[in-house]
Image (cartoon, rainbow, N blue to C red; front, side, top):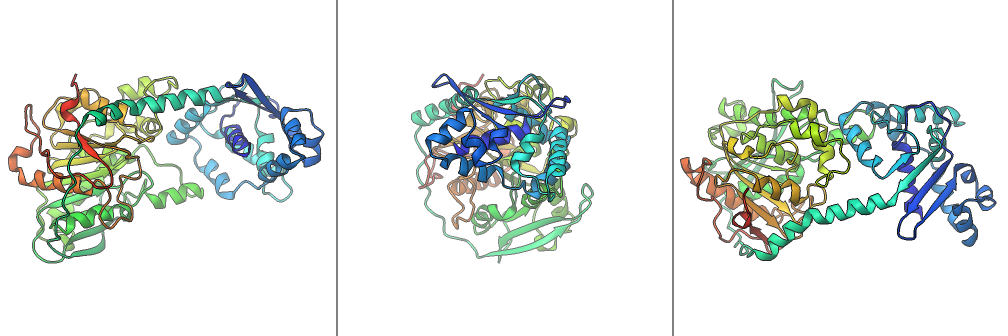
Length: 504
């Protein structure tokens, strides 16, 4: 019950109307399995006595629990709204990412007779009203609910079931492919060629006001075999990918991990504390420019730690949004056609959590074609791409692509974000690897000393890309770079399913 009302509160705070109507009075929760509803009047939530004497469904349940339910619920509802939440609402008004989040939430509940306010302006106004009504300037969650305009919030639990069924369907095709595939043999750990030297530096860039922060990992002796850049995902950091860098650097590669300042972990803290709005759509291009600037800096000798490293041939590895960045650098050009046609359709059968981020990019897509011909190959782990890149866009690719997706990824599900785009691409020697039981976070190296489950795969891919010479370039009928060899993990089964797809 407590979780139920947390959901009710979240929806009451987010799915709100701009129309000047009376204050919210009632919350109605639809329970389709028992063909019933649960209602509670906000006036009954003033204190335990009011609830105990009330006439709502919740009041009856409270009396049946001898007041225990009401005491726990009221403790929650009378907790002050965190200052950071108020600041977040104020700084996020008009943000595309916030708008898409509100649109997603609105599919689970609505203020009856009112259309959703997807700008966040009404949420801000409700917070201001609740603050004015509080004695100490610290409004409670209950006061916030009372300040929301509308008659009642109706929570549609059957829609939650629809979304769950859709999520299960999104992994069904990947499960079938994995069931029919032969997992790659577990890789034999390669002995380190060298100790790894780690340094931190900065690079002045023309597209951002402040220098980029970089983590540089490379062999402590000898000349590096090649340059690898690793791009982190939304609200992440280079630290979480040093495991991949360690694995590559000890095998002789120079690895650079940039911090993308407009969408990294520090920016997340600023968003949640109200110091900054959510990531701007412009970050779609700026992240790719970060990597290109690194390649320029190495080539021009502006990164002394990497003096002598060849920047003419570069491998880029990315996770989540970083994987999208890698694909942009591989020559895939974003388009807004699917974004405009599908972002507002809450019933789209392919809709998934990654669309919240993808749809926030729509205003900047025309500036996001930032390919880099020095990039010879990319490894894209869990990339959100289905709306951003058009069908058949692989024919634009100038670098060889390895796409990696976990069968249990709920954030960027394997289908439609990996399997479907791959089957509608132009086969040019690119490959798709699925990881059994992989989700959006456990494929990252995190704090794993060995680089996590996909580290052997990424190392093999990097080795093959640099060894291929001119043959690395994608082309119709090109032989795959990744052999049917020992690049698997002892933690999670993984398989190359490229040849099992019916390419359309």
